[in-house]
Image 1 (cartoon, rainbow, N blue to C red):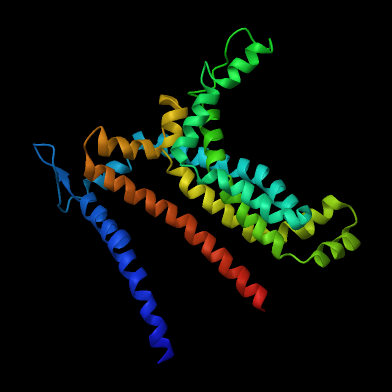
Image 2: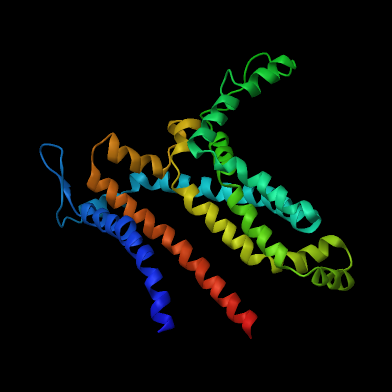
Length: 282
């Protein structure tokens, strides 16, 4: 009886997921098998040619570029976010929650607005170039917009918090006595970090990497606003199929292929987390 009572609470979120996730996903799957008629309208069908076109080698450089940008974003987020999370968890003291709040609050601002702020900073007549010219470091502005570095920088800023929070959570769960024991065994702080702290935070690093990689590889805002033709990503390709080319079936097929690709990464992370959980239970 008690189980039946709590099961009723699953009905509203279940209906919500069915209406706003499962049903739209089925529409995308059905549309991916369709075609465009002579009037340019998307028609549902059973045509698999959209998936064959999705694997056309023409689009391979776009996918490789997207994965490369996302991987670079993960690496930068880890290099920047891990020291921040480590400092807050180990030395934040009573201010740790205030420091976490100070990191999280700026990300309440819409992602598009924050990306436009990067455009204002990095444009040819932007704040950074004006500052460099005023200091006399350069006679004219340095091109920062329309470069891969601008896109990767925008992605890193946009998803940095998704790396900091999981790593911070894993560090906070660590007992200080483990680190003290590591110091007794390994001596130097760096060796203690490599042999004790880093392995203990493996799941936090993996979780943060997945949370950063998945949205970064499909992002189109940073590439559109901070990049150019040479920084075209798969998210831009999908967007153009829906809005510019008006080829919704092909855009839906690209979306499905992208979702399957990202699901492989998610399944790999879940399997790793499951193995670690079983190992900890033994």
